[in-house]
Length: 396
Image (spheres, rainbow, N blue to C red):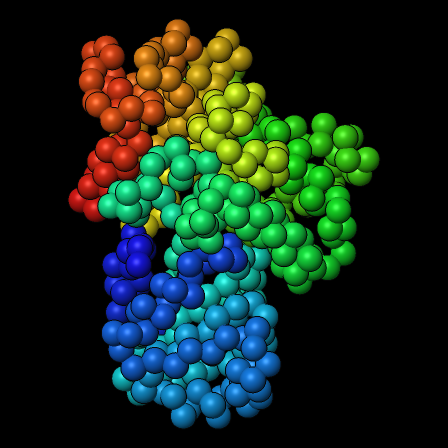
C-alpha cells in the first residue's frame, strides 16, 4: 500500500480541529486514506452514495449521538448538503462537553468553493486538505519508472493497471463517469458533450495562456458559458489555472493565467495517447511534461501546512519562467522545466531571473544527476527537487 504525503497532516488536523474535509477528484484515494486512519482509532464509516448508509442519517442528530465516542467518516458528503447544518450543532455541543476535536472526517469530490454549504455552516470548525493524484515523492520506493507515472498519471486505478491499454481504458471510463455523474450533480444544466469538447480542447492547450474568448468561439457558446465551464473543471480539481506573477518590475506583464489539466494521464487520454512512444513523438510532449512537473511540486506543497503561492512569470518582451514558488519566510524559488537531457536556461529565463532576483533557481530535467548550469542555477531531477521542497516547507 502506497503511503500518502497527506497522512501526517491529516492526523495533525484531526488533533486540532473538530472536522476535517479531504478534497480531491473521484478515485484519487480519499477513501483508502480515510480507512487507513480508521484503523488507528474507534471509527464509523458511512458511504453517502449507499442508500443504506444514507438511511442511517434519516435523523442525523439522533444517529450521531449514538456514535459520539467515535470518529465519523462521511464519504461523498456533498451528496447530503443538508447535513452540514446538523454537524455545526453537534460540533458546538461537543466543544461545550469536552470533545472539541477529531469528530468528523469528510470526503468530497469538489473544492471548498464548490462546497459552499460547508463553508458557510462550518466556518471556524473545519480544516480543508487537498488530496491530489499520486506524485513522484509518494512513488519513490514503488519502482515505477518516472516516464510510466507521467504517461499514466497519478490516479491509482490508471497507474497500477496491468498494461498501457488497460490504463487508457480506465482513464477514458473516468472521464465518462465524471461527465455523466459528477457534472450532472454539481452543475445539472451543463451539457455533458460541450464539457467533453472543452476538456479535450484544454488538453490540446496544455500549458498555454488561457483565452476564454477563443474557447467560446470554437465551442459555439458565449464567453460567459465558457468561463463557467472552465470554473467548474477548476472546482472539480481537474484543471488548474496558474496565475501570472504580478510584480512592480516596471515591465509589461502577461496577465492572463496559464491552463493545465492537472493529471497528466487524463491529458494523454483526452488526446488519445496510450503509449510512451506515441507521447514522445506528440506535439504536446514538452507542455505535458511541464504540467506534470508543476503538479508534482504543488502536490508536495499541498501535503504541508505551509502557505505556498505558485505562479508563472512572462513579460511582453519575452522574459519567462515556467514556475515561481513563493514560500514562507519570503523565499522565492524560480523553476524552469526542460524535457531535455542537456538542459539550459535560455535568454528569456536569464532576463526573468534578473527581474525577480529569486532566492534559488532550478532547471528541472528528466535526468537524475544534479549539477550547476551557471552561478546560482542548478539542473535537478523532479524527485530530488520534490524532496528538497518538502524539507524546506516542513522546516516552517
